[in-house]
Image (cartoon, rainbow, N blue to C red; front, side, top):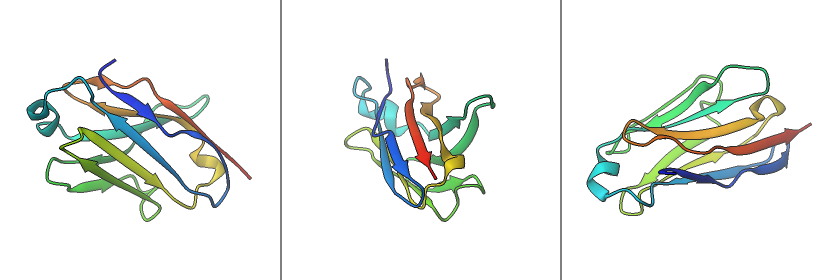
Amino acid sequence: VQLQASGGGAVQAGGSMRLSCVASRSILSTFNANVMNWYRQAPGKQREWVASITYDHKTNYADSVKGRFTLSRSNSRKTVYLQMGNLQPEDTAVYYCQGDSFGWGQGTQVTVSS
């Protein structure tokens, strides 16, 4: 597995959670060359894009998470972080990190209860 995601779990609505995704086996230049993305897939739904970040920390977000989620990266640690705030039940999904050089990580479950 080239991307390892962690940090998922269960939280109540309004809570926060931080996901991490590390490309531990990547060489640094490869990681730096990638735009890194987070996607999510809720039960019975298609996988949807959540956010992306470039090497130089430019970010984009889906409208559904804008203002609540913050994506960052540490290039030296080959890691991206998705800080999620004001979580809602509709955020419940398996969250996947992705980069073109790495494919898909294994996913981490986020469950938000009302």
